[in-house]
Length: 262
Image 1: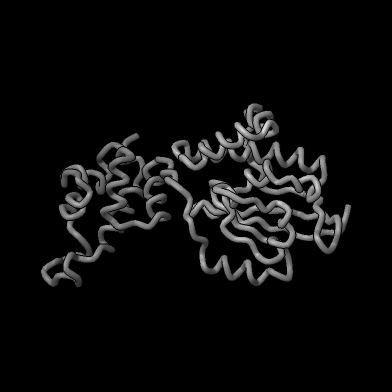
Image 2: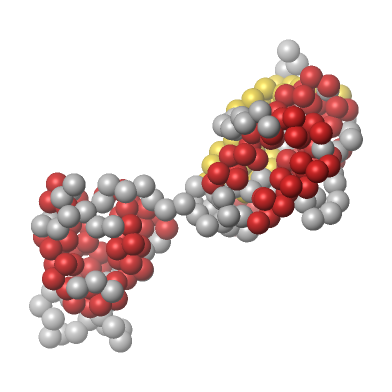
């Protein structure tokens, strides 16, 4: 597709260039227009000024993903701005190389604020728990494991002997199926991730249940559920579980909302 068919892309390039600060700080009084010159952006991106000019004028074919990545770097775009640039060019934004290892400070405060209200956890796209509030730590204590994968949800589900006590035999069967499917999804998002590959190898070697579930080839997409779990003080309790995604960090917020028993 020709870039001329996407005028918003050319407009965005001009807008971003005008918003750039002149090297050395400040804006030169000799410049008639704000921002950087086309040549400065082109040199920073490693492309010719003639090609960049055609992009801004909507006269060039749609740029490659490599060129878009270079332009994002030249414009010093944030992840959200880079993704917007890719979409304007008709491309799918690049996938994360790995999830962020730290949750947002505001999210950490939210977890603490819900200590007396509901269990809340945060895990990343590799299915590692990054944070739990006090209510979740109390509820999920039977799943606690040790070792290299002790924070991984899938590993906990397939190795914690107390899983049926927490969620019942039928619930455990359903949860192991979901966990294996979620791990398969994580492996497809991060195919070169050594941690995920070694986790799969470990479970394949040590858990017949995992082998059975994983070899079914199912892919996980569970975003909400109703689960009956044994609460340490309330006994058997039904939870509405909802998952919210932060795509910029690939973090998942899981909310366990108490509801009347069904």
